[in-house]
Length: 400
Image (cartoon, rainbow, N blue to C red; front, side, top):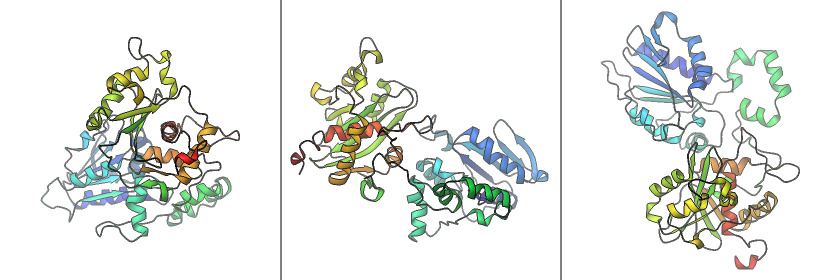
C-alpha cells in the first residue's frame, strides 16, 4: 500500500497510448463504484489534459487526440459469471487493478483478448499488467510464490513496490507517524512492508488448518463414489460445497457454489448442470433449519424436500442432523479431523479456504461473524466434516 502501483501502471498506459496511435487499452477493477472512487480519480490526476480529445462519462472511455483509447470496465462477477462482456474485446492490452479482488479466469481471458486490436504501428507484444497487495488468494500462488521460487514464466515480470519507493508519502513525517503509531504490527507488516506471510488471527477456529498440508491443487472426483453436497440456506448468498469421501479417513472438498439471489431450485439446477454424471450417486447434508416449514419454497415443501425431489434422492441419502452442531463441538471435531485424518480442500474453493483460515472464535468459543466477513462457506465446511466423521471423537477406533 502506498508504493505507487496504480500511478506507475496508469502512467505506463498513457505512455503506451501516446507511443502507439490508434491503440486500445482496457483497465479492469472489481466493481464500478470502486473504479470511480479509486482508479479513475488517480487517472484523472495524471493524464495530460492536452492529450484528451473527449471523455465518455457514461461508458468511461477516454478518446485521445491520436486516436488511442483507454477505457475502464468493472469485472462485476456477481452478474457476469462467464465474463461474456470481455469475450468480444479487441485491445492491445489490459491493466488489472488489485488483481487479488478479481477472478483467476478473467486473467486467462485477458491473455486471449490482448493483442487482438490491429493497428499499423503495433506494440511489440500484447501486454497484460496487474497490481496486487499481499493476499492468500490465487494471485499468491500464480504470481508471488513463483516469483520467490524463481519459476515465473520467462515473459512475466514482477516488481515489488513498497511505500519506501514513494517519496511523496515516505518522506511525509506526519503520514508515516500515523502509520507507525496506529496500525497494528500485523497490518503494518502486510500492507506497508509488503510481507506476504503476515496473516494471522488471535483465536482461530481451525487452528490445525494448514495451507501446506490441507490445500491441494486439484481433485478429480471418482465417478464410482458418491459426492457429498453441503447446503447452507443464507438469504444472500445461498451456498454449497461439494466433496467426496474416499474411505473412512480420506475426503476432499473440491467445489464451491454460491448464488447471490435465488432459490433452492436454482441452486439444484446449477448442481445438476455441473454434476449430471453423479445423478443417483449423491448424498446431501447441511443446515438443519432447512427442515423447517418456515423456509417454504413452494407449496408445503421445506428446503430438503425440494432438494430431494430436484436431485432424485432417497431418504437415506439425506444425512441432515435434527439440529445443527454447536460451534464448540465443531471446533473440537474439526481440529481433530485436520490433525489426524486425510481431510483436504482444493485451491479453487477460494472462499471456503479463506473462511477456514480466517474464522475466529470469541472468548466463549463461538464463531465470530460480521456483516463484512460473513464466513458464508464456513458452516458448509463444518456440516461436511460432521457428516463424514460423526464418531471421530466418541469412537475413534472406527477410523484407525
